[in-house]
Length: 308
Image 1: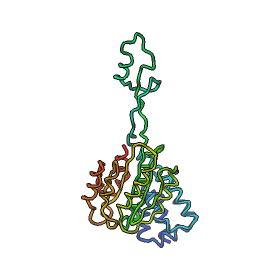
Image 2: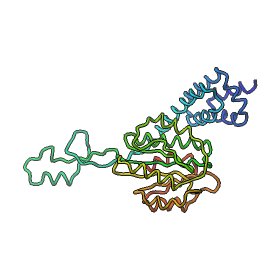
Image 3: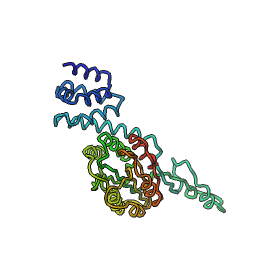
């Protein structure tokens, strides 16, 4: 069979872009090839060894339906590991948001609060360590809800990009309280804000998403407020990723104003770009940022930028 040596040649080169093209042009042929245990084993080994992790992830995600149940389970585990590696790498590039906490002198802290220290030692003959006030920079403890539009215009590859974005957020917010919601005309709570969930489990749940339905932004914002109403942190904010086209449910602006801060990532979903007016208005009324993403692949970095 001519396709078999071509597939093996692509694997030997680590050329997952070639294999993805092959999967699109000859899906039935590649599906049959993957039933060969030796070729499937080669595929798994190649995806684990490659430096082209995103191409490998796209390939594994694209062939999920061509695999047997046992193969799919193995491929899903590898895919999640690839996404975790990518998300960890991306999240490590940003500076984590911190808050300044004043504390008496403690070894290891390198910033002194001059005014408070001067107030304490003024007039004393001999100052002691308790008079020296230091600045301890600690990761912010926030309550955050991310609402992700998965309506009909969210094409298959975009689900994988969105899953990577959730991985970036999960790595960035370890130790903090956050919630993940997906929405179309309905809302699905992927992770409640008060629930601990491993990154593996979170990504696995995200990979099950099927894009469908119309877009009810107002309902998503209402459900987001429900998550933030739980007493999990003093500082609370929402992040919504959508093109802004509210095709059902009414005007979302009246709900957006109830957020103390709502950041809007305007992402291209389908033809038409999006509703600039609605996205800008939602962010403005809630004192948040509106970030425009020209290409959907930029979504993970946009999430990271907001979390700084």
